[in-house]
Length: 193
Ligand SMILES: O=P(O)(O)OC[C@H]1O[C@H](OP(=O)(O)OP(=O)(O)O)[C@H](O)[C@@H]1O
Ligand SMILES: Nc1ncnc2[nH]cnc12
Image 1 (tube, rainbow, N blue to C red):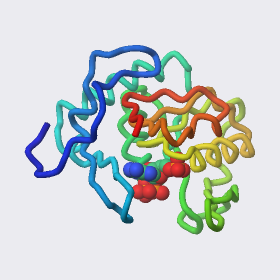
Image 2: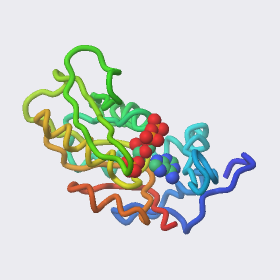
Image 3: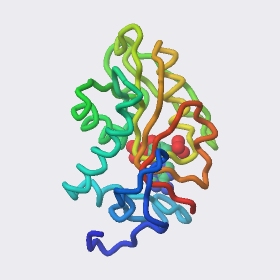
């Protein structure tokens, strides 16, 4: 764990939903209390990103897990999902597309509106981003309530894609986001509180 003056996020050593226990990702993630609001423990991946070998290890491990789903394209969810999708695309020899907050993408877009706990949100992609028969694996850094991921899957389907799986570094299992997502979600580190 880097000496960053902040607490490592709690929990036993990390594994994956595929059962592999050989990469201790949790040692590289810090928990920042009361960010962005009092009472929230923020799982910060900055400490992982700034450690070259650890970041490489995480991407290698996730690539191994994603490969069997045989994606033809990846999609990253703004903004931390882009950090995942870009290196993963290079690793797998694929392209990737950006799923963005409203009015960020040029040209014709397709959007999907979804409900938040209070209010609404929308996610968009470029209308010409997909070719026929595309199998898109979705990437983000973290699964919390699952609202963002569920909306992203609906958007990709609306655009004509098949979504065989989604993958994140971190899953906050106590929020039960998986229940809202109807594809397999692969994760490298799970937190129970
Ligand atoms: O499962 P959910 O409850 O929907 O939450 C998970 C989402 O929240 C975070 O993104 P955020 O909206 O903070 O944006 P950022 O990536 O730009 O920081 C995270 O990167 C996921 O995209
Ligand atoms: N607790 C958390 N830490 C980091 N990113 C998040 N996105 C939603 N909840 C989060």
